[in-house]
Image (cartoon, rainbow, N blue to C red; front, side, top):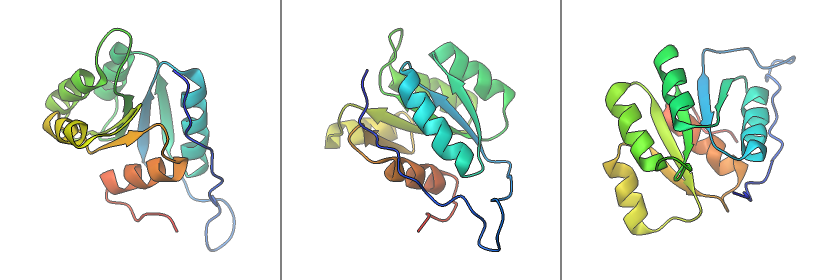
Length: 146
């Protein structure tokens, strides 16, 4: 699945100088597109997140069981199961995790279904990386970056 999320350079420097301090922010990036995973991982590592890539729903669920509260990014469709189903399983088994779905497009019906399965947000692949960063930060109640 080709993606159009564009890499946007966000300043990773701490306002007082030096690198941004490490935090306990954990992000699981589930996707079958290695390019998507690489772009998202690079962006969030620069922002001080601990990032865990996963190529299948089984890997996502395994990581979610091993990690404390985190954010999970999922596609709306894996080859073997719907990302919506994976999301519903995750939020039921691990209520501390917040899930953001990324799909080919967004419609009002899909937005309602996203809420129904317990995801925090649904983004289209045409959204910018900045939109994804903002949604992840909002999911864990962190300030949105300027």
